[in-house]
Image 1 (cartoon, rainbow over the protein chains, first blue to last red):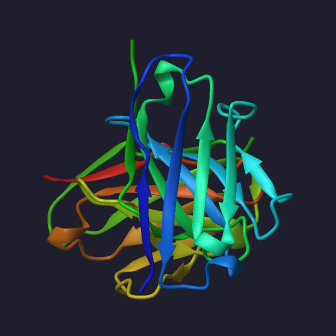
Image 2 (cartoon, chains in turn cyan, green; image 1 turned 180 degrees about the horizontal axis):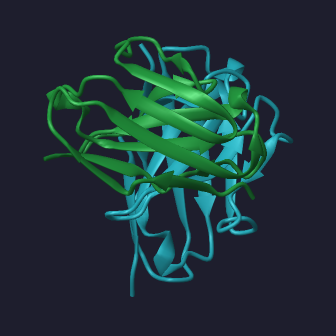
Length: 120
Length: 108
Protein backbone atom coordinates (compact mmCIF):
# COMPACT_ATOMS: atom_id res chain seq x y z
CA UNK A 1 0.00 0.00 0.00
CA UNK A 2 1.02 3.63 -0.42
CA UNK A 3 3.35 4.89 2.25
CA UNK A 4 4.65 8.44 2.58
CA UNK A 5 7.12 9.29 5.32
CA UNK A 6 8.18 12.89 5.88
CA UNK A 7 11.37 13.96 7.63
CA UNK A 8 13.56 17.01 8.12
CA UNK A 9 11.36 19.11 10.36
CA UNK A 10 12.74 20.97 13.34
CA UNK A 11 13.26 24.32 14.98
CA UNK A 12 14.83 27.12 12.95
CA UNK A 13 15.28 30.85 13.44
CA UNK A 14 13.48 33.40 11.28
CA UNK A 15 15.40 33.91 8.05
CA UNK A 16 16.83 30.42 8.22
CA UNK A 17 16.48 27.44 5.89
CA UNK A 18 15.25 23.89 6.19
CA UNK A 19 14.89 21.01 3.76
CA UNK A 20 12.03 18.57 4.11
CA UNK A 21 12.02 15.14 2.49
CA UNK A 22 9.30 12.62 1.79
CA UNK A 23 10.12 8.96 1.12
CA UNK A 24 7.49 7.23 -0.98
CA UNK A 25 6.75 3.55 -1.42
CA UNK A 26 3.98 1.23 -2.53
CA UNK A 27 3.41 2.80 -5.96
CA UNK A 28 5.32 3.72 -9.13
CA UNK A 29 6.62 7.06 -7.90
CA UNK A 30 7.67 8.41 -11.29
CA UNK A 31 4.08 8.11 -12.58
CA UNK A 32 2.50 10.51 -10.07
CA UNK A 33 2.51 14.16 -9.16
CA UNK A 34 3.30 15.07 -5.57
CA UNK A 35 2.20 17.84 -3.21
CA UNK A 36 3.18 19.52 0.03
CA UNK A 37 0.36 20.79 2.25
CA UNK A 38 0.78 22.44 5.64
CA UNK A 39 -1.30 23.05 8.73
CA UNK A 40 -0.42 25.69 11.32
CA UNK A 41 -1.19 24.73 14.93
CA UNK A 42 -4.95 24.75 15.47
CA UNK A 43 -5.60 26.06 11.94
CA UNK A 44 -6.86 24.75 8.62
CA UNK A 45 -5.08 23.21 5.67
CA UNK A 46 -2.95 25.31 3.32
CA UNK A 47 -1.73 23.93 0.01
CA UNK A 48 1.98 24.72 -0.44
CA UNK A 49 3.44 23.23 -3.61
CA UNK A 50 3.07 20.67 -6.40
CA UNK A 51 5.49 18.96 -8.74
CA UNK A 52 4.43 16.99 -11.78
CA UNK A 53 6.27 14.28 -13.62
CA UNK A 54 8.46 16.92 -15.20
CA UNK A 55 10.42 19.31 -13.00
CA UNK A 56 9.19 22.12 -15.26
CA UNK A 57 5.67 21.43 -13.99
CA UNK A 58 5.71 23.11 -10.59
CA UNK A 59 3.22 25.31 -8.78
CA UNK A 60 3.38 27.17 -5.48
CA UNK A 61 1.06 28.84 -3.05
CA UNK A 62 1.28 32.63 -3.03
CA UNK A 63 2.64 32.76 0.54
CA UNK A 64 5.70 30.62 -0.30
CA UNK A 65 6.43 31.55 -3.91
CA UNK A 66 10.03 32.65 -4.34
CA UNK A 67 11.09 31.20 -0.99
CA UNK A 68 10.25 27.48 -1.27
CA UNK A 69 11.34 25.04 -3.98
CA UNK A 70 9.84 21.62 -4.57
CA UNK A 71 11.90 18.93 -6.28
CA UNK A 72 11.86 15.19 -6.85
CA UNK A 73 14.37 12.36 -7.30
CA UNK A 74 12.61 9.51 -9.07
CA UNK A 75 15.62 7.19 -8.63
CA UNK A 76 15.20 7.51 -4.84
CA UNK A 77 11.38 7.73 -4.73
CA UNK A 78 11.72 11.01 -2.92
CA UNK A 79 10.18 14.47 -3.05
CA UNK A 80 11.73 17.40 -1.22
CA UNK A 81 10.82 20.91 -0.15
CA UNK A 82 13.64 23.42 0.22
CA UNK A 83 12.43 26.23 2.46
CA UNK A 84 14.44 29.46 2.57
CA UNK A 85 13.87 32.83 4.26
CA UNK A 86 11.63 31.16 6.80
CA UNK A 87 9.12 33.26 8.72
CA UNK A 88 7.33 32.73 12.01
CA UNK A 89 4.12 32.19 10.03
CA UNK A 90 5.70 29.17 8.27
CA UNK A 91 5.41 27.26 11.55
CA UNK A 92 3.23 24.24 10.75
CA UNK A 93 2.92 20.51 10.31
CA UNK A 94 4.00 19.80 6.75
CA UNK A 95 2.32 16.92 4.94
CA UNK A 96 3.54 15.19 1.82
CA UNK A 97 0.72 13.92 -0.39
CA UNK A 98 0.42 11.82 -3.54
CA UNK A 99 -1.71 13.12 -6.36
CA UNK A 100 -4.49 10.97 -7.80
CA UNK A 101 -2.51 10.85 -11.04
CA UNK A 102 -0.27 13.27 -12.93
CA UNK A 103 -1.97 16.33 -11.44
CA UNK A 104 -2.27 18.86 -10.15
CA UNK A 105 -5.35 17.26 -8.71
CA UNK A 106 -6.74 15.78 -5.57
CA UNK A 107 -4.37 14.51 -2.89
CA UNK A 108 -5.19 10.83 -2.72
CA UNK A 109 -2.78 9.66 -0.01
CA UNK A 110 -1.08 11.55 2.79
CA UNK A 111 1.86 11.07 5.12
CA UNK A 112 1.70 11.79 8.84
CA UNK A 113 3.60 15.06 8.59
CA UNK A 114 6.79 16.63 9.90
CA UNK A 115 6.72 19.62 12.24
CA UNK A 116 8.49 22.86 11.41
CA UNK A 117 8.82 25.55 14.07
CA UNK A 118 10.22 28.96 13.18
CA UNK A 119 11.12 30.86 16.30
CA UNK A 120 13.84 33.07 17.70
CA UNK B 1 -6.87 32.91 -6.58
CA UNK B 2 -10.13 31.04 -6.01
CA UNK B 3 -11.37 31.64 -2.45
CA UNK B 4 -13.48 28.87 -0.93
CA UNK B 5 -15.80 29.82 1.92
CA UNK B 6 -17.17 27.00 4.04
CA UNK B 7 -20.21 27.27 6.27
CA UNK B 8 -21.08 26.84 8.96
CA UNK B 9 -17.80 26.99 10.84
CA UNK B 10 -19.11 24.52 13.40
CA UNK B 11 -22.04 22.12 13.23
CA UNK B 12 -23.27 20.62 16.53
CA UNK B 13 -25.24 17.44 15.93
CA UNK B 14 -26.05 14.08 17.48
CA UNK B 15 -25.29 10.60 16.11
CA UNK B 16 -27.93 9.56 13.60
CA UNK B 17 -28.65 13.12 12.49
CA UNK B 18 -28.08 14.51 9.02
CA UNK B 19 -25.23 16.96 8.35
CA UNK B 20 -25.14 19.38 5.44
CA UNK B 21 -21.93 21.34 4.82
CA UNK B 22 -21.54 24.14 2.31
CA UNK B 23 -18.58 25.29 0.20
CA UNK B 24 -18.92 28.45 -1.87
CA UNK B 25 -16.32 29.51 -4.44
CA UNK B 26 -15.44 33.11 -5.32
CA UNK B 27 -15.60 32.17 -9.01
CA UNK B 28 -16.99 29.29 -10.99
CA UNK B 29 -15.13 26.02 -10.49
CA UNK B 30 -15.43 22.95 -12.66
CA UNK B 31 -17.22 20.31 -10.61
CA UNK B 32 -14.55 17.86 -11.80
CA UNK B 33 -12.04 19.85 -9.80
CA UNK B 34 -13.80 20.14 -6.44
CA UNK B 35 -12.97 17.68 -3.67
CA UNK B 36 -13.73 17.10 0.01
CA UNK B 37 -11.44 15.81 2.75
CA UNK B 38 -12.10 14.60 6.26
CA UNK B 39 -9.62 15.19 9.08
CA UNK B 40 -10.11 13.42 12.38
CA UNK B 41 -8.32 14.74 15.48
CA UNK B 42 -4.60 13.95 15.42
CA UNK B 43 -4.78 12.39 11.97
CA UNK B 44 -3.78 13.35 8.46
CA UNK B 45 -6.56 14.40 6.09
CA UNK B 46 -8.31 11.71 4.07
CA UNK B 47 -9.81 12.11 0.60
CA UNK B 48 -13.57 11.71 0.88
CA UNK B 49 -15.18 12.98 -2.34
CA UNK B 50 -13.65 13.82 -5.72
CA UNK B 51 -15.25 15.34 -8.80
CA UNK B 52 -17.75 17.02 -6.45
CA UNK B 53 -19.86 13.88 -6.11
CA UNK B 54 -17.81 10.68 -6.43
CA UNK B 55 -16.85 8.82 -3.27
CA UNK B 56 -13.21 7.84 -2.88
CA UNK B 57 -12.51 4.11 -2.42
CA UNK B 58 -13.63 2.81 0.96
CA UNK B 59 -15.84 5.79 1.79
CA UNK B 60 -19.29 4.75 3.10
CA UNK B 61 -22.35 5.67 1.06
CA UNK B 62 -23.74 7.86 3.85
CA UNK B 63 -21.35 10.50 2.43
CA UNK B 64 -22.51 12.32 -0.67
CA UNK B 65 -21.41 15.41 -2.53
CA UNK B 66 -23.22 17.67 -4.95
CA UNK B 67 -23.10 21.07 -6.57
CA UNK B 68 -21.78 23.00 -9.51
CA UNK B 69 -20.46 26.41 -10.47
CA UNK B 70 -19.85 28.24 -7.21
CA UNK B 71 -21.99 26.24 -4.77
CA UNK B 72 -21.10 22.80 -3.50
CA UNK B 73 -22.22 20.72 -0.57
CA UNK B 74 -21.30 17.63 1.38
CA UNK B 75 -24.03 15.63 3.11
CA UNK B 76 -23.64 12.95 5.73
CA UNK B 77 -26.99 11.19 5.83
CA UNK B 78 -26.74 9.66 9.32
CA UNK B 79 -23.83 10.62 11.52
CA UNK B 80 -21.76 7.83 12.99
CA UNK B 81 -19.43 8.43 15.98
CA UNK B 82 -16.36 8.33 13.71
CA UNK B 83 -17.78 11.11 11.49
CA UNK B 84 -17.22 13.82 14.09
CA UNK B 85 -14.29 15.57 12.47
CA UNK B 86 -13.30 18.60 10.40
CA UNK B 87 -14.22 18.68 6.72
CA UNK B 88 -12.43 20.71 4.06
CA UNK B 89 -13.30 21.44 0.46
CA UNK B 90 -10.54 22.09 -2.07
CA UNK B 91 -10.43 23.24 -5.67
CA UNK B 92 -7.84 22.51 -8.30
CA UNK B 93 -9.65 24.27 -11.12
CA UNK B 94 -6.85 26.83 -11.15
CA UNK B 95 -3.52 27.34 -9.46
CA UNK B 96 -2.83 28.00 -6.72
CA UNK B 97 -4.90 25.16 -5.34
CA UNK B 98 -6.94 26.37 -2.39
CA UNK B 99 -8.75 24.91 0.60
CA UNK B 100 -11.79 26.21 2.36
CA UNK B 101 -11.45 27.14 6.01
CA UNK B 102 -13.12 23.94 7.16
CA UNK B 103 -16.32 22.93 8.96
CA UNK B 104 -16.06 21.17 12.29
CA UNK B 105 -18.80 18.63 12.94
CA UNK B 106 -18.96 18.26 16.69
CA UNK B 107 -20.94 16.16 19.10
CA UNK B 108 -23.94 17.98 20.51
